[in-house]
Amino acid sequence: MNAIEALTQQRLLLQLEYQTEKEAFRRQTEEMGLLRKVKRGDAWWTVRVERSFYNSLNQLCVEVIRTADQEIEHNFEFGRPVVFFSGQTSPNNKISIKYWNFTGSVSYVDGDRMVVSVPDSAPLTDLQSTEGVGVQLSFDETSYKMMFDALDRVMRSKGRLGYLRDLFYSRQKAETFSFAPLHFPYLNKTQEDAVNHVLWAKDVAIVHGPPGTGKTTTLVEAIYETLRRENQVLVCAQSNMAVDWISEKLVDRGIPVLRIGNPTRVNDKMLSFTYERRFEAHPDYELLWAIRKAIRDLRSHRKRGDEKYHQKMERLKDRATELEIRINAQLFGEARVIACTLVGSAHRLLDGQKFGTLFIDEAAQALEAACWIPIRRCSRVILAGDHCQLPPTVKSIAALKAGLGKTLMERIVENKPEVVTLLRMQYRMNEEIMRFSSDWFYGNQVESAPEVKYRSILDLDVPMEWVDTSELDVKEQFVGESFGRINKAEAELTLLTLQQYFERIGKTRVLNERLDVGVISPYRAQVQYLRSQLKKKEYFKPFRHLITVNTVDGFQGQERDIIVISLVRSNDEGQIGFLRDLRRMNVAITRARMKLIILGDVHTMMRHPFYRKLFEYIKALNAPE
Image (cartoon, rainbow, N blue to C red; front, side, top):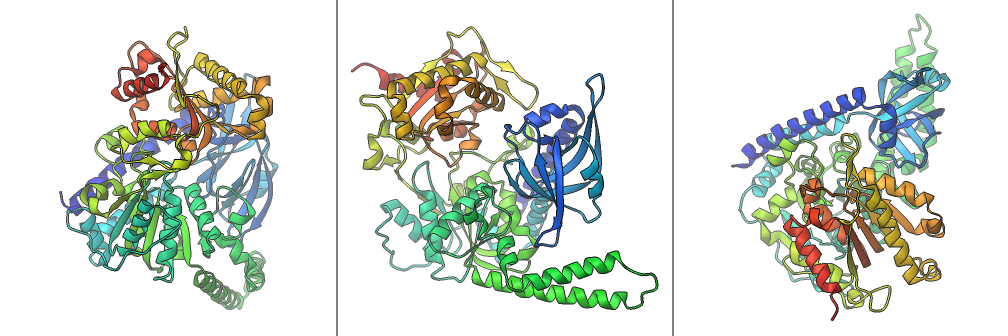
């Protein structure tokens, strides 16, 4: 299949995914109760609608404070579309919902406070004075539009973009420069190779980083070295969190970054290099603000028969545009790295911008169509990630089976193994935790750095344990569509197992050494149940700040001293659902630095070769000498 045929098929599959997601969203909105949506973190109800103001991008914004269910983790993040509604409870406890007919977009969120940009025509007084107001996530039409547009352009393209398209879909050798390799004393051998391969690549290079191998460190170095040869580069990733992470590391390295879009972790360091903050800090900004205010005043006080209205308006608009262009030119001129999400690279601020090199971090988590959005602006592409960890999210089973989940990174790894550098030295895990993952996923090529090889919390402690839950009388339960499964008895045992391990270490030591713990479950219902039980248990009170409970996706890119995994599945048929996606398990087991405890029903899990092998591996470690 040639590139055009393959991309045409991608477009059809993306269309299928779009329809599946839109339909699921419609059904959810109509059928799912409001309280379930709140529980899932897709809605806030109730909220207080506070002040409204114009932001530096001249968008009308409104501040929203969540007043109920504040402990529930939510899914609101920068750029996501939202709708407002009012929910009234009738005497027979039925909730009736009325939606306002405009869509807003999250422009900033921190804890229980969110700023939403809304159309100028939004009835804000109405919002502020209505009882029982709530806000919920809406269907994200924009991202799909941008992906469809990118695919269409790539298929039509002739020049450089057409060349890259045909190259990525064929076995044709990618072109390279040739010069002597550079030496970097603070990188290990494979990291040094990776940076050199990036610098030699004319078309494409891939940095494949298994867990704990210092992929970010390597990427930052590659960007730093590229900037000695180019004036500016574009750095993208699938999620806002991944963009923040790499941006922060680049800033630490002394590289001027301009972050388009708002960061997820809102701290002063992050905010200081966002476009909006820099724009507001520009000396010409006050004048621009005054002109924009004059335009708004002129609009709202327009007098009938005012012949000079249009002239005044045009004059003010021209002046505002001129100032805006000047400020932008300066901000973009000073930045060496422009950082944004893949979809964010279609932002109007980047219109007409071209870059020599594009770096895509976490490339194995992004749909191929999303990667083409920034590739259109660049002449060579560097991808970094690990296709043996979390895959992109695809909701349509049919589209997934037909290949929508296959990423651009996987495609290039298959077609051009010569452009891939595997990082082989890991600095996170005890050797025995790492060994299983290395054997199963990386052809036994990853090794442990000497300083972490034997790291452990207790003397003579075995770094991996499997607690068999098949003796428990209780089986898994199914909680509502798309909310997943729950196993309450296993959740209780999970916390009891953690408590017993803490008792072995000793309370004082856990607190003094700040030993941190991740409790992971693949199912959201189990995660929420574990969180609520953890809050109730008096024993864990002093340790709560050290324990995080989340799904596998929530732990991507993170690590903890101790990891406890609750697998949930327990049934007579040996059904394990999406635990069959082994890449997720690879992420879960490789978060642990020193201790990994897995709780799972051995009879249910053993029918799958991966879990059987894992169980046998752990059993052998724990066997008496």
